Length: 190
Image (cartoon, rainbow, N blue to C red; front, side):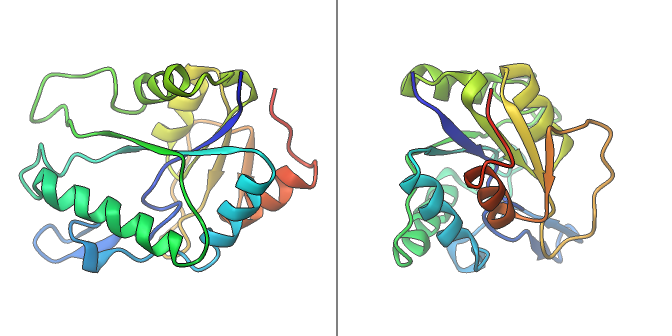
C-alpha cells in the first residue's frame, strides 16, 4: 500500500479570491483568478521526490450555488496544473465535491465526510494510516480524522486566522513548513 499527502486546494495551494457579488473570499471561479502560493511548487516537488503521492481533495460547491459551470471549474483545475508544471511540480490526482447541502441533499463526498479521501485511497491503493490530510479548515481536519489519516492544519497566508474547534495532529504556517517538518522527521505518519 502507498502513502499520500491529501491536500485541500483553496487556502493551501492557492489563495482565496475576494468577489464583490458575495462580499466574501472564496474559491477561484475563473482561471485568471487562480494564484498559486509562491512556495507551493517547491514544497510539492520535495514531497513527491521523497515518494509521497500528492492528491487534491476539495469541496467546490460553486456549481451547486450557480456561481460557476463545470467547464469553468475544470478550467481552474487545468490552470492549477499548468502553474505547477511551469515550476516543475505536479499532482497525482484530484477529487472534487461539487455539492452543497443548501442546494442539494447531503452527500458522502463533501468534507467533513471522508468520501473523497476514501475514494482516493481505493483508486491509489493508499494506507490511510500512513497518509496526511493537509487543510486550512476544521472540515478538512474532520475529514482526515474520519478517514483515519494524520492531519495538519495550515494557515491560508493571505487570510485571517480561522478559529479551530477540531485539533489537528500538527499545525504549520503553510505547506512549505509542513513539507519541511515531515521530511526532516519532525512529523511522522502512522
